[in-house]
Amino acid sequence: MLESLYVKDFAIVREAEVAFGHGMTVVSGETGAGKSLLVDALLLLCGARADAAMVRHGAGRAELVASFRVAGGHPAAQWLAAQALDDGEACQLRRVIAAEGGSRAWINGRPATIGQLAELGPLPVEIHGQHEHQALLERSHQLALLDAWGGHDRQLAAVREAALAWREAGRKLDALSGAGDPAARMDWLAHQFHELAQEALDPADIEALVANHRRQSHGAALLQACDTALALLDGDDGPAAAALLRQALATLSRQQEHEPRLAEAAALLDAALIDLDEASAQLRRVRDDLDLDPERLAELDRRLARLHDLSRKHRCEPRQLAERRDAIAAELEELRAGEGQLERLRAEREALAQRWREAATALGRARLTAAKRLGRAVTGLMAELGMAGGRFEAELQPQSGQDPDPQGAERTEFLVSANAGQPPRPLRKVASGGELSRIALAIEVAALGMDEVPTMVFDEVDSGIGGAVAEVVGQKLRALAAERQVLCVTHLPQVAAQGHHHLSVRKDRDGRGTASHVTPLDDAARTEELARMLGGVELTPETRAHARQMLEKAQAS
Image (cartoon, rainbow, N blue to C red; front, side, top):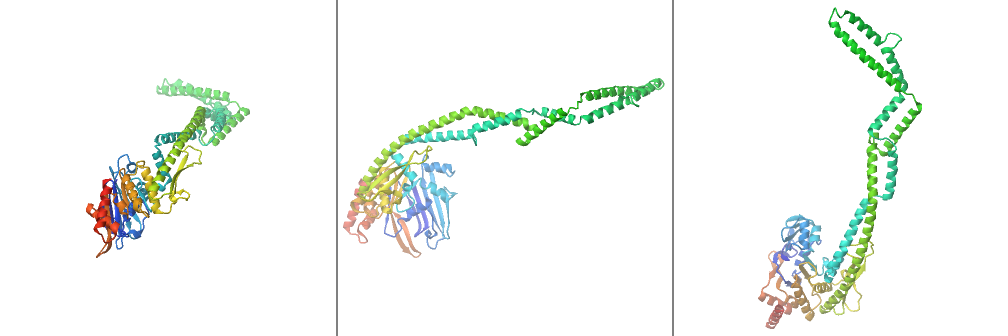
């Protein structure tokens, strides 16, 4: 609910603060006094485009503040919480427009963008009149209103649930399928794995292969080295290391009785002879193991070349090929296990699509019934509101997309014909602001209590009407105010008399220029204002009596 509106240096308003209560508040005043400035201020606080010309002449800036009270479960409260701008049940919108151009905005005292104002503003307040900012012109709002009118919560929930489940199944299917065809991916991986599995790729196997290749490629040099070393250590041709050591050991052994310390040297020589014999034996074993086999060397060359080819192909070191092989095997296993899951997901998705089609068909039938009922109700109210012969239709338009949509298989377009003989046209294209306001009023009265907007504003809803029709308009607004807070700018006493509260806007001149003032009226002042609206400048006792009678009759209803 709108609790207060503060306006400073806005157009011809120097400064005004207005408190609002429950029920219907009417705003009246002479032409040009600035009655609609309150509505304009609300529009700007709801994100409408600002103009520096809106700043009062001589002022540096205009300031607008609206304070609302929103219940915890209301969409406005949910939006505030989602944006981390909540402050209990308070919802304060503030906007400052600079005279040199540009504007700034705040929500609950925290800086906000104009886009955020435009998102939040329509949730607590809905404005009807000769303005662009009207939620009823938005097709999404029209569809929501039709569903609320028809009580389609259960059918809509079934459609939404099936559509969202279908999308989630599709997401899982895409994730499981990857970027391409799973079968093709499996064939490719199987080929890769077969290539790697044919080779011994464990690091120990690769090290052994490298060592064997090195031994074969250097076989001749190794044989030569072994033979040369054996000849030097224990050969028959020329002095050998073993023979020289034995000779030295025999010489020392003969003399060690004369010098005990020679025994230690002899022991060392004896140990050296043992090591030399073992080295010679190892050399013979190595020489005997060496096999100069060109075919074996060629095979080792081929295997090493194959490993290097695989390393380049898989962009890794040869010692990492085993890890790559194991990773491919794991992915293959996962894909093979996923084949059955893919089939299950495809079947589940198709079942969800069928479930959505059935739910959407049921919702579509319910919407068609509701659209006809809403059309008859609004058409009847239009006749009461001075548009006899006019017609209202809620046209259902099938969606061309094939994918399940959470909102169903159709959208709606509100069509109106304000006069008999004219074809219905989209509500958003109706030219007359007064007609559009009355049509909006008819829709709101017909759909009373169906939406969640707590405050409704009607600007010049009575434009172009009078007499009995004006009284009906006032009665409908008062009926609407039993369920919603209503603010109505009017120039008709029949409408003004129906209000629970009355604000008067007048324009005065003082030493600082011309300014508009907003004044709450008590019963006596309301009688005077209604008399002015009935009889003009000079008020007679008869006019006042008529005004008093009109007010008493309206307030008694």
